Image 1 (cartoon, rainbow, N blue to C red):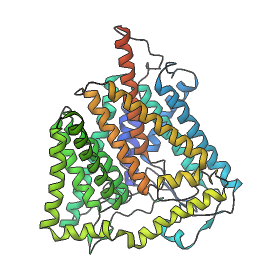
Image 2 (spheres, helix red, strand yellow):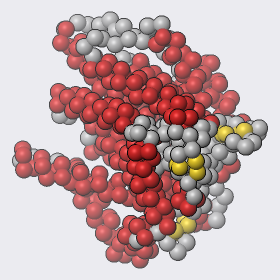
Image 3 (cartoon, helix red, strand yellow):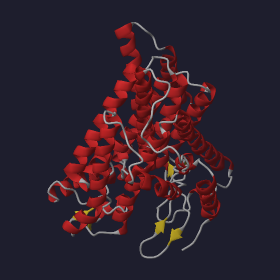
Image 4 (cartoon, rainbow, N blue to C red):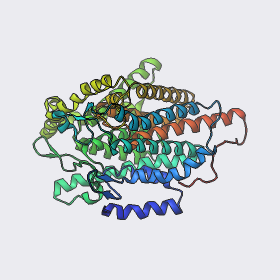
Length: 480
C-alpha cells in the first residue's frame, strides 16, 4: 500500500470538509473531476486505487443512510420524484445483487473481462469468474445512489441546490483549465503533473496518447482522452445553454463554453466529436422548428450555432492539420484496430445476453463499449427494462416542468441546461460507455432530478398560497 502525493493533498482536505464544513456535496462534485487520481493505492494480485469521489460519497452516506433508514428522508405521496426514487432503488438493488449472484450462476461463460482491456480481450475472451471488480461496481452504484439521494434532500433549499449546480460549473472550468495547461505542456515542453492527475494504479492511464502523425491528445484530469471528451461534451453543452439562456454571469458561461470546446477538440476523441456534432444539429433543428411553428427566431441560439459552424469551416479551410485530425478521428476511425475491437464487443455482448438466459452475467463482469450493450450483457433484460423506465420517467417529469415554467425564468434556463447536458452524456455513453457507474452520469441525474423536485415543491407552495410549507425531509443537519 502507498499514499501518492495526490492522496497526501486530498485526504486531509476531504476529512477537514467532512468534520468542519457543510460543503461535502460540492466537494464530491469537484472530486469527480479527478477520476485518474488516487488517495491510496493497494498493490497485490488485484490492484485497487481509492478514488476521491467515492470516498467523499461514502462519507456522505454516513449521514444520509441513517436518516433514510429511520424515515427522516421522505417524499409527498403525490410527488412525481417519489415514484422515480422507488424505481431507482429497484434498479440499484438489481445491479448490486447481480454483481454477486450472476457471476457464480454463469461461471465459466466466455466474457470480455473488464480488467484485461478491450484490445487484448478481442483476441482472447476469458471464462467468467467472480472478482472484486463485481463488488467494486456494486459499491460504486450504491454510493452514486446515496449522492443522488443527498441532492434530492438538499433540493428543498434553493441556495443549496444553486451551490451544487455552481460546483458542477466551476469543476468543469477547473478540468478545462488543466486541459489548456496540458496543451501548453505539449507545445512548449513543460512538465504535466501526472503525479497528481494520473496516480491511480488500478487504471491503465493514457495521458500521453498520440494520433494523426504526432498530434498529442489531451486527457486533462481524466484517465484517458475519451473520458475527458465524454465529460467536456456534456459540460460544454451545459455552459453554452446557460450562456444562451441569459443566465446570471453569462460572460463566465460563454468563456467556459469556449474553453470546453477547445479542450474537447484537443482530446481528438471520436465520441466527443460525434456527441458535439449531434447536439449542434439538435440546436439547429430546434431553431428551425421554433421559426416554422411560432414564427420566432431564437437569436442567441441561431447566432451561436452559425458561429460554431463557421468556426469549424474556417479551421478546415485555413489549417491543414485540422483536416488531417478530423480525417483520422472521424472518417478513417472505423477502419482502425481500436474501432474494430470496440465494435466487436457489441456482438459479443448479445451472445453473453443470450447465453445467460437474458439475465446478464452480473454488473462488472463483461466489458461492452456502449452503455446499451453493457446494460444488456451485465444486468440483462430486468436491468434494461428498469433503466428504460427510469429514463422515460425522467423525460416526462422534465418535460412537464419545462412546459409549466415561464419562458425566460432562471429555473427554466437551468433545467434546460441540465437536460441538454444529461442528454449529451447519455448519447456519449451509448456511443462508447464501458460502465454505468461513472460519477458524472449520476451527478447530472441527481442535479436534474433535484431541480425538478425543487420546482414541483415551489409550484405546490404557490398553489396553496401559503408563506411556507412543511416538507417532511430531514433538513436540520445540512452538513455533507
